[in-house]
Image 1 (cartoon, rainbow, N blue to C red):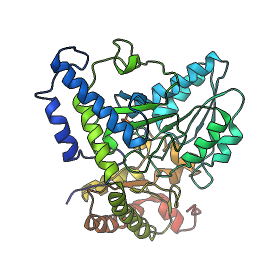
Image 2 (image 1 turned 90 degrees about the vertical axis):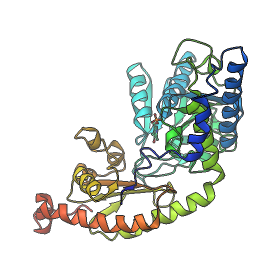
Image 3 (image 1 turned 45 degrees about the vertical axis):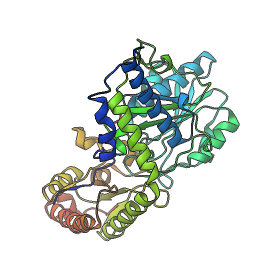
Image 4 (image 1 turned 90 degrees about the horizontal axis):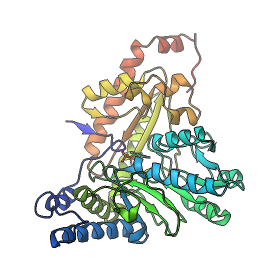
Length: 395
Ligand SMILES: *Cc1c(COP(=O)(O)O)cnc(C)c1O
């Protein structure tokens, strides 16, 4: 049995998405910018996909721009608001300390270019409040960029309330909704969201494609210069198979959201309840407002990296949700931001489940994880010190 429980990193493509892509690899290969009928057929498919994505998040088709993924959409949204803000002398941005690197690194770049960024504290309840946003807004604030749901610890942010605050103060509001799209209900008009990023491969669509919603009237800078594709805001011949696959996957996810997420929540709650029984562990993330499929824990006295390798050998694909996996020894900025100390942050585990998982798989996981944690603690000098009272437990 091989159990894939790393759906926050990427998902398996659905048959619906694959089938939706196939015609655009074969018969319908025209360039949507060509005037002949082969091109126009491709153009129609492109616009149908745009209308589908728009319908799923409650905006107009002309407000959707296709990108190469969530990262590009984040970059373009943030740079646009920053540069247009700067023209009016507004160079202050509000964000949170636990954003995805696509947002954080863009903000750090802007700081070097003279922008000032307020990173809201997320240590209270592993979330932020709309009040924190309201208090941080200044005369010179040109953007609030706050993620819809956190990819590592699963906290779902009070997006509609933040939207209300931003609208009242006239500040553009962008949200990285990559983890939310297809999993949580999104209505950009109702929630007063001005810009939103999503990515195909997080909801059983293809990789390398995403979308940016930008409210009509808000200016966008183009990050890629060239042809007039995407209303002149994103040059390059459109990746039509991927765009059609993403649109089909999003529509499928939104149509079946209620029943799928009910099952996913059930598996998540079972994992959380069972894994909480492991001594000296702590749940990361907002326990109440939480992504349906996210389970995130810190275990004292172990290394997340060894935990992952041993779980993989037991047939469970998980993540530490930390930068350790990418070769860096620094613990996750997200876990540090919620107040986990370095040693504890190193012992993290993220399991992210989807509707393709089964309860039988969950039963396997709740047996495997405690075994592996106990095994690693047995070999851990830190754990020996804790047991002997030479060191104090943190969790
Ligand atoms: C995956 C992810 C991204 C990046 O999306 P890509 O399509 O892989 O570029 C951005 N933000 C969040 C919250 C994510 O989970």
